[in-house]
Image (cartoon, rainbow, N blue to C red; front, side, top):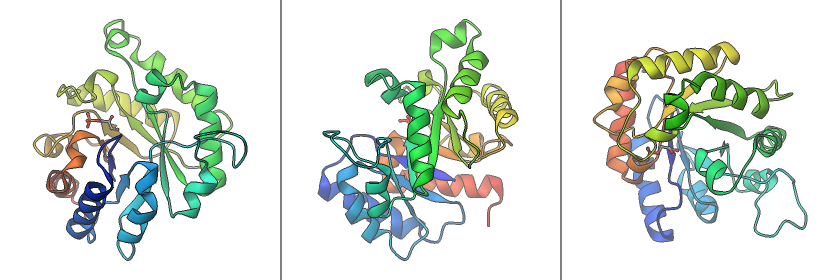
Length: 238
Ligand SMILES: O=C[C@H](O)COP(=O)(O)O
C-alpha cells in the first residue's frame, strides 16, 4: 500500500492537476494506492478518482459527529464526500497541535464507526532513539491510541527524525520496529520518512514493510508513481 500525504501543500488547481495525474498513472496499479489531501480538495478529488482504484484519504478528523466545534471536520463529513482512509496521530499534529493519545484514540474510534480506515502514525524522536527509548515510546503510543479497539487499523512507522529530513531509517531499524509493531497488532505496517523514488526499491526489500506513507515525494505525480512501481517490482505485486 502506497499512501500520499500531501500535508498543507497546493492550491486548488494544482491539487486537482497532481491528483488527476496520479490517477492516470496509477489507476491500474496492483498495489493499493491512496491520496490523503487537504479537506477542501476532497470532494473534487473524489470525482477525479471515480472509476479507479485510487483511494481518497484525509489527514485528520475530529471525533464528534456534529456540534459546536468551530473549524473541525468529522468522520461523518469525510464519509459523505467519499473518504475511505484517514491519517491519525501524525507527529506533526502531536507536536504542533498538542494532539494527545486520548484524543487520537477517540479519533480512531470515530473513523471506524464511519467505516473509514485509520492510518495511525507512531514513531520516536531523535533524542528518544539516542536514549534507547524507541520501543517504549512506540509501545506506549500503540497501547494508548488503540485502547479498546479491535478493528483493523493500519500503522505507519514514522521516525520523527526521518520526516522531511532526507535521513532515512536503515533497514535494520525499520525491520525491528515493524516486527515489534506486528507483535502488538497483526496488521499492515507502512514506513514513512524521506521515502523517494531512489530509495523505495531498497526499502521495499525489507520483508515486513507493507508499504509507504510518502510526504514530499508525493507532491510530484511522476515521483510518486515511481515509488509505487519500485514497490510493486520488489514485492512482486502483480
Ligand atoms: O506522512 C508522511 C511523512 O511525514 C513523511 O514525510 P516525508 O516523506 O516528506 O519525509
